[in-house]
Length: 165
View (cartoon, rainbow, N blue to C red):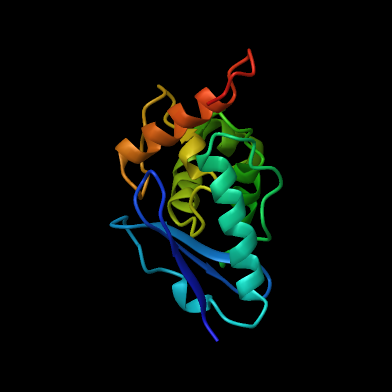
């Protein structure tokens, strides 16, 4: 049984896939590597994971604090998983550079960039929060316009006065 769902969003259709253990993929229509990891969606528990992911995304795109992430089950190497775990800890509306992440992990910015580029779970594992040393919007599979949109959206959600959207 395959657990894959298409969810409309302000960025276009999102395709979310899940296994019994968690979300295996979240891709945007037309993004680089759009179909990667969708074949890992299997098991009867995937439908419940999809429901949790869809609820999280609905809160996120409505401008509310989306709360705790749904369970995640991205496939990757040990190093990629370490990078993705660090990405998941970048707070809403904040960014880190490839160099900052590399320094924390004791590796090179190039290695970090490679791992970030292989993130199969966009938005939930917020690779859009990683920027170049000069603040530039580098290397986002969904495209620089979507990266800019997501970062601006999150900044509005986290305004100091609490006004959000």
